[in-house]
Length: 314
Image 1: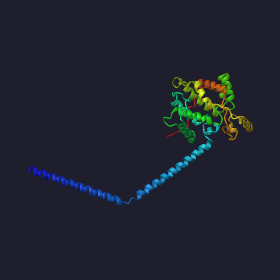
Image 2 (image 1 turned 135 degrees about the horizontal axis):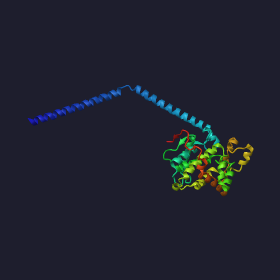
Image 3 (image 1 turned 120 degrees about the horizontal axis):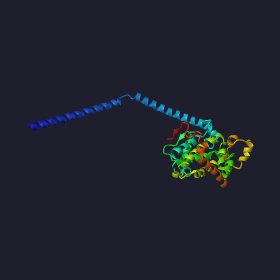
Image 4 (image 1 turned 45 degrees about the vertical axis):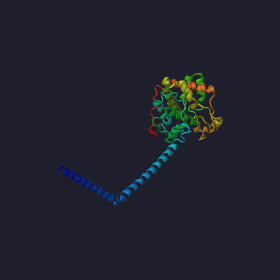
């Protein structure tokens, strides 16, 4: 009897389980049929509207971005290859300095003080071109992506300085820097004060970064002399042979030739490298300025960290 009762219980459970399975199957089939017959018009319209809005928004962003870049480039004329005074038109009037110089130097002080051979070692051309292009598209208001090598940033800075139509030390004052370096490097500080405002501020920012790097020479192996040797080619070169003739025609009295010559940029001609003696004079002057930066500018508030609002390049 006990076995018979157990068999009945098993049969009852099977029957109940089978009934529940059939119930689920029927419900699933009914729900599926209901979904097929449902009118999805409103949902499709909503999706279509969202796609249209998204496309329109993307187009508006693209148009606004293109317009913004055009206005930025119009405002500074040409980012790469333009005269320093034009690049600085959007900067603070009291301390004009291209943002790319501020940002690169700030990045190097924050992340590159211990980088061995900083300003001396080369960096991959593709990375340098990419970052320099990003700076140009963003009118200089771009932060290097997190993890960017200090060597890449240093080479971007050097490459930018080489794009200027006139060296940062200017054609007019370069002979005086050379002479001061050869005879009495301390006189270079006096000559420095005669530079145009954008050149003065830009050189001060660069010298501060170099001074901070030199203070860590035990780790990075770049003292003031090594740094001066590395940056001299980016700060000093002789004008092309026809520069003096064109300057006389333009009646230039200032030092920013590109502004005086109405767009006739000296970069159209071949530059003349300094002789070994001239290079030695500039190196000696820069070495003095780097080594004595704290003494020369100790009472002056540093512009190095007063950068304008920028965005990080992703």
